[in-house]
Length: 212
Image (cartoon, rainbow, N blue to C red; front, side):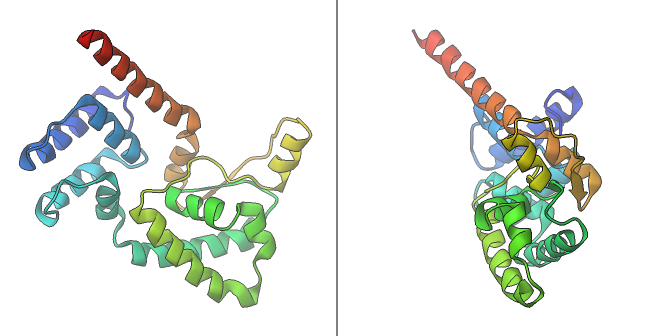
């Protein structure tokens, strides 16, 4: 989804407003922005379908992580698929090139749970795949339910070496999984996350100014 796309933004806000009305919640601007940024890696149609599912399946007002679960499915099942995707990428791409996964939870598990892409690749052995799959799935379910995500690329050896030498990195990243979703995850960087904080800070400043 794109916040600057007026049609997508309005459809999203209408869906969120409907959920708020059903649960007697107030749809504030700050809430809308937080939910939008948490869900922006998904297509608007997927988000709206998940909101409809939440109407019948959730007794309480759904958090972003719950809406994501309605989009992606049961985290235990998804974790098995993602583990296989990571193992295939380790064999096919290797540690030299940076990678971007189409699932930001998967990227978070690799970065925060396994020490990054290079470390994961260097420690992976054929006889350790069974234990990797078990550990990965456990972390994936936990990260998914706590809404822990990582956007952008997972640095490979080339990017790390270039950064250490203050040299530009011209290596292309490998998009893992759905190329379109992976490309979207690549563009949802910390700058955008910081822009959310800036917007919320501006909203708070406006509120304080109005109350002064």
